[in-house]
Image (tube, rainbow, N blue to C red; front, side):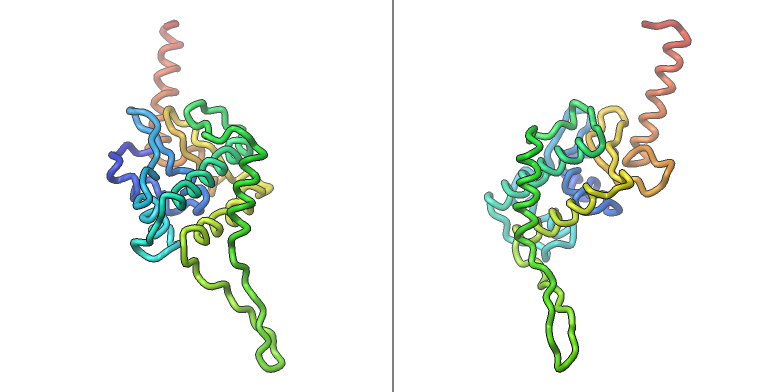
Length: 203
């Protein structure tokens, strides 16, 4: 993960090439100062929802909406850890119970409004669901997308194992090992250091 200040997390850590559920998981991030949460206030969540194209700019988000988003985020991180066999201690979810995590995702997904069917004359036409109008509906969209991602049979979801990283990513290339080029460089540097240490016989 690229190091940055809390001020630029909203743009740096969205990782726009990743699916929205992964981007929500990655609002927990780390640098040399420790593990941080990019969703500290309702306004932070509002900016995230707008940047993820889930709501218009500057949506109204309440404290309850923020709690729901963090609960969904923590549930997704717990299920992602299960799916990827993630053993990173710093990446552990605040929601340890798997059954609770599944319940949270299912409850969030239940709020999504499905497409409908219209009869126009003697023809059938699909009527797309209206765009999300509030944070709960927007988070429902993320939950539905997460269910598809977490049950993907090919194991495309991965945990980044670079030193200090707590992010997840979707493996879009067979040789991809890390969430970003910066993490790849850090992991290679750590391996190089360990090899030289072993060659010198350091303990």
